[in-house]
Amino acid sequence: MSEITHVMTNSNLGLTRGRIGQRWKQLAGSIGLQLVSLMLLLSCWLILSRIVTEDVLPTPWQTWAALIRALQDGYVWNDMAITLNRTLGAFALAMSIGLIYGSLLGRVRLFQRIFSLWLVIAASIPSLLYLVITYLMFGLNDLAAVIGAGLVVAPSVTYNIWQGMKTLDPDLTEMARVF
Image (tube, rainbow, N blue to C red; front, side, top):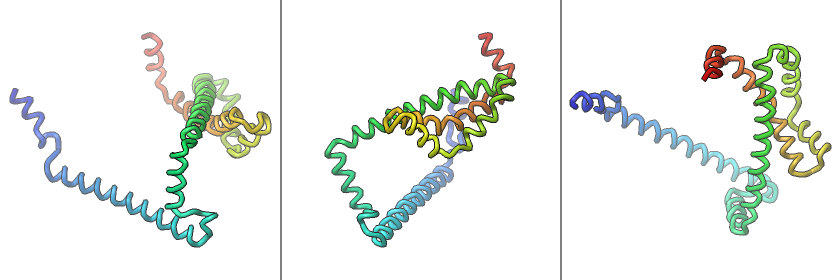
């Protein structure tokens, strides 16, 4: 019993009063810097809204008041739900493309030699072009937004899955198949 007590003391865990105090100071300093950063952002925003007209760039207080009014009117929650659905759809599309294409690139050497160039080409196409093409093909609707956003993200997802598949240890993969 005394061995367990000895193992669980603060000194063995490295939690001396000096270290705890030092951690609190680091945390307070970090939070302080973040607050200074926020105040700097708000100050720049306020100055810019004074330089240009408030019709172009409203003040932080006008923006806050508009947000409160929008929340009270209730339409913000509906718009947020629509945006969340679009985001989840684009995520699912990008992950599906990335998982299939990236896994094939990482596991099938012939597939990699034939199609890896297309990943480089897809990644080098500007994001705006994907969106314009999908809007031209499908019209201005939710489906086009989801497909466009999914296609923008798919090359990055594909590349990361491809690199992850390449680094997998073949012995671990074989062991996973056995069990």
